[in-house]
Image (tube, rainbow, N blue to C red; front, side, top):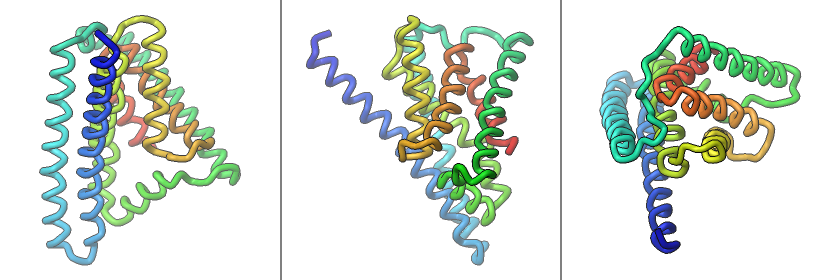
Amino acid sequence: MDVTRYLTTKSLQVLKFVGFLAVYLIAESVFEIAGTYIKDPLAARHVLGLSLVMIAGSLALLGWRYGKQLEANNPRQIGKKKPTSKRIAQLLWIFILMTAIQVIWQWLISKHILTIPSNQQAVNAAQMKNPVWNIFFAGFLAPIFEELIFRGIFMNYFFNKDNRLNNILAVLVSGCIFGFAHEMSFDFTWIMYSALGCCLSFTYMHFRDIRYSIALHMMNNLIP
């Protein structure tokens, strides 16, 4: 592949990735708007219904795109191995690592060394307005969206060669992009989010199955 064709292909992939991310953010934004109608239950139900339709459509689109990627090129044999007790035990060890990161993070916040991330403040505020639906979104829907985008689609677009260097770069870059999606400033909070993102990226790469990183992401979001 010549340089011009390569750059054109990668540019289109960047645009597509940004487009899929925008689809998720739009669906999430409409969902959050429903919480602003706390004094108007009828309007809240209408907006919530619209957002759920958009969420379902967005998930269908992302799932379809990810499936098509694997059909076209799947050098890592993603999704080809069945779950075993050993693999589940390994997943739990990674979850313990992520929990340790969260505990250290919360300790630093409690000691006023760090502040509560703005992303978490927004999540907390949304849960106060519409607790049940927002816990459902943060605990179950957001992990599916984010794993399809930041692990599945992202790695298939930009790191789709199965070798050691490529796999390490995939884990690190995906984790850092995940960090920036939650904290735009290059600070310690970004490092913590990126560390969690790297754990999720490693899980996807290690198990070669997005169901594991989705399950880990759900556990990480639900436990707090």
